[in-house]
Image 1 (cartoon, helix red, strand yellow):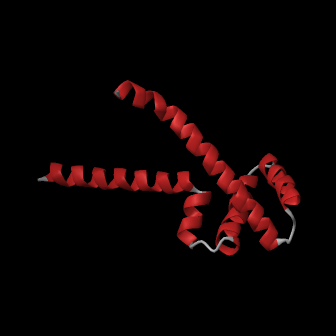
Image 2 (image 1 turned 90 degrees about the vertical axis):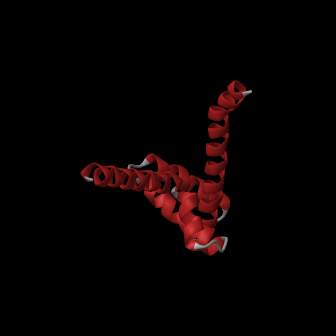
Length: 110
């Protein structure tokens, strides 16, 4: 049974990443509609152009954030989890590592 669950792990992560990408694209389209008043076709063109230039994904994340907060009415923290989930996850893991390191140093000092 556990071998089957391990085999589903990578496929589940790929599926989750695809769903997340579609949700981010939908938020981006909503952000372009709110911000510039363009339709979805213009938003998709802007999306692909932004992804072709260096650091364009930062602009895309900002527009998707605007789409999630202004277009969909989400709270700011929900929009951040949508547009930058790996940044949030990285910050959580780094802070847990720092706390674990500080606790191990304090235990060694005793």
